[in-house]
Image 1 (tube, rainbow, N blue to C red):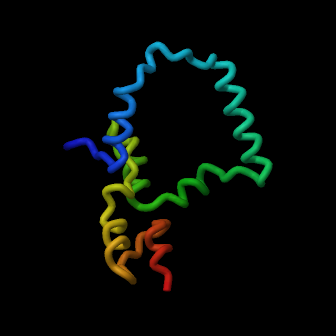
Image 2: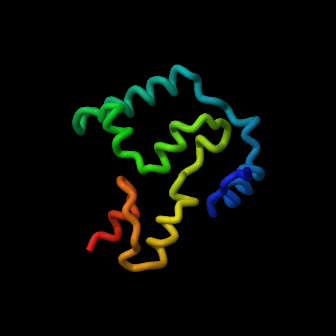
Length: 111
């Protein structure tokens, strides 16, 4: 099966080829860890973090399938919305007949 690509992938791939990251200095892992800790603390300031079960409950059916599927590599990194028929319908049909639970495109179709 082929690799999924969004419209932005080509742009970012061309940009990456023009940039030599091999010579760029890397941030120490201790700094990355402190930044990550700070981000979590800031996120927690707005209220408690969602539990893992709450996060899973908020996934659309396709995100759940990808999360549970015994696949690896790039498929686990795919944004399902980029290839979802619900997105295509929502972008082209007013009051599209899509009813996937937790799909943002369904939310846009609210009357």
